[in-house]
Length: 485
Image (cartoon, rainbow, N blue to C red; front, side, top):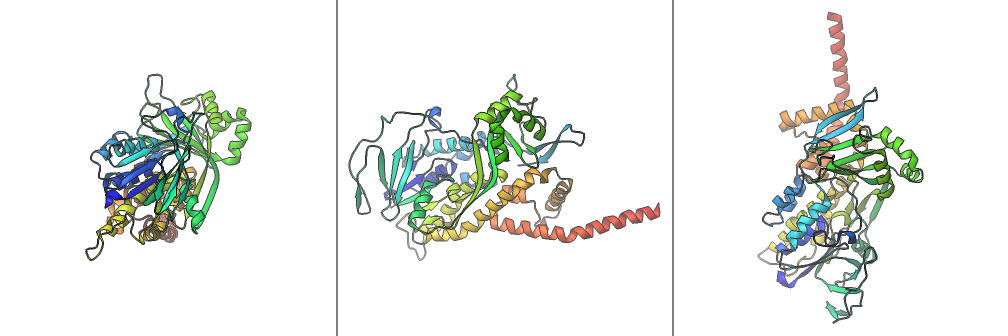
């Protein structure tokens, strides 16, 4: 029965590719469509530029990839990632000199590299068809027919578009392909086509979906720190390097070629002003982010990169519904978009895939009273998944947005570092208290994000309650020592 069901996946990033693998390994016929060209074998010039936002492949992502059931896949992905053990915070001392503050951290990877490894594994599956350079233009969820149009990048001629051919029949409805588009029938469709999801827009036209989008009034700009003249790294390659400033931040992670890739986040109006007046950029960058110019980048290179690299608005997206009846579902950024400050956008999407298949699709197919489901997605599964997953992804979206303040201001605060030290000690030496840092719960555990957020809020209330007592104890101690002296 599985072989007779077709699952269409829209989006060939890490989340879409993993979703296609999960469906294919369960025996379904899978068609994956991606807007871009093949990242492994296609023309790199025919792929639109994407941001190099640092991403971490932590416990949740590792579990999701491992659960795909593809032998050797996790090892392949980890072999093409770099371990990150420390967050190195760069700041200035009171005398203005550059200083580094190491903080224990958590494998690190790039979405592009992870997607490449997952795609190679997917293309080895015999029941999978992967089509690049096609964008979704419409989807009829009732008739279960999707339409895709071939796209060209950098004026590539459309000489290989589909020719008019046979009619396509889907659920009793017949459509005819035109020369620049193709219609695809499906039994179930999975939208993993990112923050500006076309499939989500199609759903919103055909059903009521609450939708919330908020911007943080900041832009991301890519920066690449090249290797030294001998090909070696210019900084410690086992660290995620962070330059915090009250109004902006630079983050950089190591790549395999000796370079560091990352970017700057700064206020939108400030970025626009610097675009109009590039002569101001060197002074701005040197003042805000010590130790980069001229040690890692020349002033000319930094200014040129800022001028030529794209600027991306950072936003959060929340949806009230993740699917349309039992015909389709949204996973990853298509259903929730978060700012990159916990580096959890991709990981949350990978976890979406595992949760949807392992905790909802698989149990539905095991059935009750010995009954076996005859469709990919039995009645009620998407609704149940939405109700379960929504509070978790909304909680993670909120925590990611809140972490922007932590990265810019909190990590340089002595009081905040003392708090983290206390939390780490309680986590290590008093495990019965179930006390842990927010970072460790998010990155190294598998608790639901909604549970993680509740525990974090409870810990904050406890600390606020005991802080006056601790301060009083300290004052009394000072007075006692003074009287004895």
